[in-house]
Structures are given as C-alpha cells and as structure tokens.
Image 1 (cartoon, helix red, strand yellow):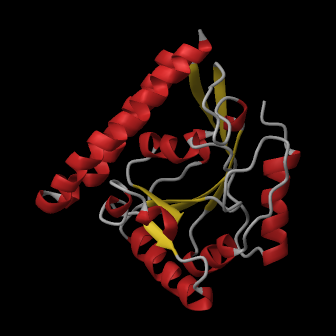
Image 2 (cartoon, one colour; image 1 turned 180 degrees about the vertical axis):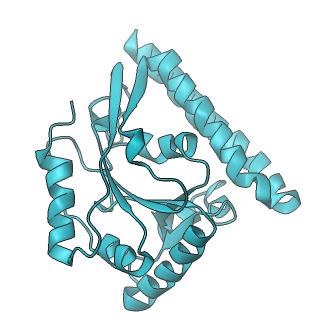
Length: 231
C-alpha cells in the first residue's frame, strides 16, 4: 500500500513540476511578479498530495520564535521536503540555493525570476560578497531568507559539515538568525522513492545571540541539529 502511494505521489510531483514549469515560463514572460505565488501554490498542492498518498504530514513547533519582517532561517536539511515546506509557511520566502539548480531543465531558469538567490560555490570571496549584497536587498524588502548551512541533504543520525557562509550573512545583515531542526529524512529520505507515513517535526528555535564568532555560531547550530532531541 505504501509503495502504491509513493508511486502516485512521485507521478504527481514530477508530472506537475514538468507541466507547471511550462506554465511558469509563460508567467515569466507575461507576469513575472506572480511566479513566487505560483510556486507557493504548487508547493501547497504537493504537500497535500504527500499527505493524501503517503500519509506524511508535518507539525511546526516554535512559531513564536519567528519575528515579523526580514529574518534568516538556518535550516537543517535532510530531505527534499525541506525545500518545499517554507514556500507554504512564509509570506515571502527566499531560498539560497546552489547555482547548479538554475541549470535544471524546465524550472531551473524560473528560480531567479521568482526571487530566489543562487550561489556560485566555486566563486570564492567575490561570490560571497555578491551573495551578501543580494541577501541584504532581499531582507530590506521584507523577505525571509532560508539557508541550509549543511550545504546538502544529510541523513538522520549523520553529522554534516556546516558551511561558514551563514556566519558572514549574520554579520553583514544584522537580522535575527533562527535555527531550524527537523526529522524530515525519517519519512522522505534522500533520493528515496518510497516515503514512510508519519509526522515530520519542524522546530523553530530561539534566535542565536547576535555577535557570535564563526566557531561559536557553527558550534551552536551543530548542537541544535545533532545533539538536541527533536521529538
């Protein structure tokens, strides 16, 4: 039964992404300001399909820790679910994503017009400076930044290597940095075709103290991601 549900969900996910991407290109030419809202509506539909076909839902804890206006969410990354859910939970989500994603067929070229920020991870200091400029512009516009300090999906129980870019963004922006932990990989594993039924827990933790140095911030995030029980 779970296999059938996973088949139906994956057909829905990839089929709608392909067809929806074609419509997205029409919006890109005619009404680019509607691209983000269109992506948010698609993400809500996908999460409803995930629940209907696979029995996977989610619970958000600590919403009171999310302030209004510009903020940086330093989110743990275990699953493709993590790249969908913030589209449904935030008003003006802005993901920091690897530049390679913008080269994906159909929807890759829609990411930047929808207000997402691509990072050239091989670009060194110049790429980081450009990222900081883009992030500060997005924050000034009241957007919420989502960054995955692990840089890639990390399986539950595995300790990832945190990238220091979050430290530079925190210093340059001066906005609250909210750590986010999750157990999404227990139900939607990396590259896993079959999904496991259950409730994904997402925890918004209190903002990190301002002015933390590199090691202190990365240590604090690692403790939240890997040492704190999320259930």
